[in-house]
Amino acid sequence: MADEAPVPPAGPLVVGVDFGTLSGRAVVVRVADGAELGSAVTEYRHGVIDEVLPSTGRELPPEWALQVPADYLDVLRIAVPAALAAAGADPADVIGIGTDFTACTVVPATVDGTPLCELAEFADNPHAYVKLWRHHAAQPQADRITALARARGEKWLPRYGGLISSEWEFAKALQVFEEAPEVYAAMACWVELADWIVWRLTGSYVRNACTAGYKGILQDGEYPSRDFLGELAPGFEGFVAEKLEQPLGRLGDRAGGLTAEAAEWTGLPAGIAVAVGNVDAHVTAPAARAVEPGQLVAIMGTSTCHVLNGAELREVPGMCGVVDGGIVAGLWGYEAGQSGVGDIFGWFAEHGVPKSYVEEARAAGESVHELLTRRAARQEIGEHGLLALDWHSGNRSVLVDHELSGMVLGQTLATRAEDVYRALLEATAFGTRKIVETFIAAGVPVTELIVAGGLKRNPLLMRIYADVLNLPLSLVGSEQAPALGSAIHAAVAAGAYPEVRSAAAAMGSARPVAYRPDPANVAAYNELYAEYTALHDYFGRGGNDVLHRLAARRRAVAKGRS
Image (cartoon, rainbow, N blue to C red):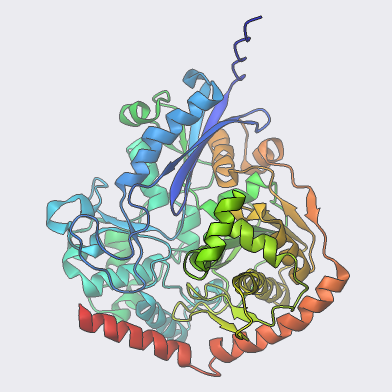
């Protein structure tokens, strides 16, 4: 008997597209129940540019991280049609598309949205390219913004935990203004990529409320004042009015209709709803059905972003921000994060493992990560005798200091690769606990940890997190949670649901509790965490400034070579 043809999925459908650090992924989702019918991933051709410009080979200084915007359009041209094909979907059934992006990821553009790096006169200027979220070279500018805001008593500073990050819009823009005035003068728009991709899809530039609030210092309807910016740097006072300000779109709103050009790229019908852009972490909360106070969502990949809702406004030291309706309407959305998590594990697997481990993993048909995890899982807590600081990419929360760097304490000649690997896993869990404790101490309850992202597939890591935090840990059912979240917002933008909460209830992923803390493990990790806290405060809160001095020395050497 011949195979029966697959039954086409019942519409209506929506498409969610998640633009990550290394790739973009598209998922086709049924509006009625959130069933994910097909997905596809497209790797960025240029990846993360942190050594040399691809166009000219020009070397980049330390702490730079750039991208090429054309890579994002490849995702629309390749991943979206591939996801439709994988779903066996009729494009005519698709009623909307939603997107999310890493943040703060920004690009200087012309008045029509053309990135300056695509213009011949700026091809060799690194400041004309996309500055990825993990571009940390604007730390001196961030420090000055914080210092001036503190001295002036700016009311918006406590909304960001008292510190402005080098990852955000104003610090990166000030770096361009001071280091590349020709780029600053030529740019008409300083655009978040979450908005740029929607601009490409609709032909309309709509600034989303999420990135504006969390990354653009927009609080209570106001940006930092012209007077503040002028005192920060003469000539910079017009930045908001001239380069940044744009009409705002609320989360779940319709930004516009899909243009004929974008319809040709994606294979979707022209005119369908395009949702206002969003941040990858924040859009994940509805995908996890985590829209009530106390539910902390950790999106764990190359970095980790922590988001949760609270019923009341609180000032939380070192948080990345709190925005009214920043995740869902009617609640205060809080954000914190860790700049390096999966990146740290990847760095160690690539650079810290002997050849014999690589060969053993290959022979066993597993990755180096799987080999290290398997070996590390055999250990008792504390058996390796190590303690690490998870600052290999700086500290986003709660210290907000990207001049900091990582370390491993306690190594001996008996230390092996799996020992260090486990210590690094534990260090990232300790970093998350520091964030959770800071929220709770400030009056923002955290009652549950919900994990999304690729790292949720590591059972040892999840067990460590549950035990270190002494919290029940749930896993988001979707393998493409941000893309699912974007699809949920697309359904709202298309009018299928009245608001994000009801769409999340119908389309969100189930969240069974997968790990519960073990009391004996909790007690053991409490002892190690106390040591971590002492190390954290000594090197991160001024007890010893050696990490800043080392960073300054590295910059000086690099500058001398350029």
